[in-house]
Length: 306
Ligand SMILES: [Fe+2]
Ligand SMILES: [Fe+2]
Image (cartoon, rainbow, N blue to C red; front, side, top):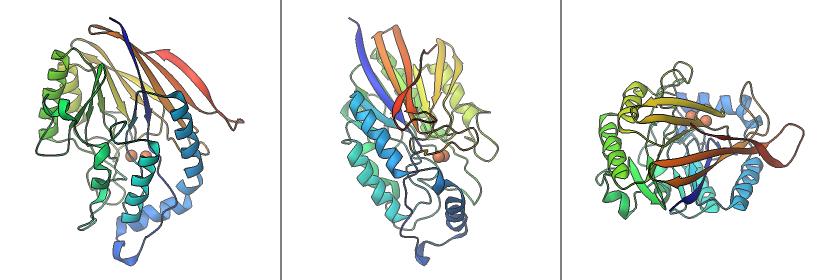
């Protein structure tokens, strides 16, 4: 029997304003990040735009919302708190899934819980725990969403100033292979979400996933129906040649961009309509967002993914 499920994908909201940058949290990376924010990014990422995008997402009534990281900017306790409240405004933990970005796991924060404040949006459900998800560590988590299994990976690691690289690591690589294999056995449509693009060559130097080749090899051999990522602030569709068919690798622009910056577009998000049944899924991607000269969110384009 054919089923339909709609997944909304947004990313890189970089919530503002940045408050609570006290001397206690000062270090070289935060200072440089703060200067960069004040000089450039604060003119791009607007909370009001993020709210407009979220209102439109809700109006589309998706079955689930996937957020691929960079909720905040320089890893301050007040930012984590603000993002936790914002996540609550998007939806309950069971309805909204998050993976951390490099701005969310940014630089040492002492005993502060950091992204653990968002745990309700980053944990496995009972189905996931019974089908390969790690039970002794937070990532990867696995959630059953109707006909889908969503596997959430953490690619964010603390890095020195000027470096925005990520790493999945051997443990997550082994676990994601296990989760994808078990989800395939269950006949589910398999979605992987990660902040950094999971293929080599999709970002500039010092911003890449350091073990992208290893992750791509796992995805290619195990198979997946869809991979969602953020980080680039670009709307892209790439394809990984999997052993059982092509795997679409989908990036999305920032959900808070009040103005375009370089090649980065205005605020937008993706709606992925998944129809079919095990063995014959079809995924239709509709981008919705702001268009130059319009204050309203509109359909930007629609395409069927490979
Ligand atoms: Fe970002
Ligand atoms: Fe990022």
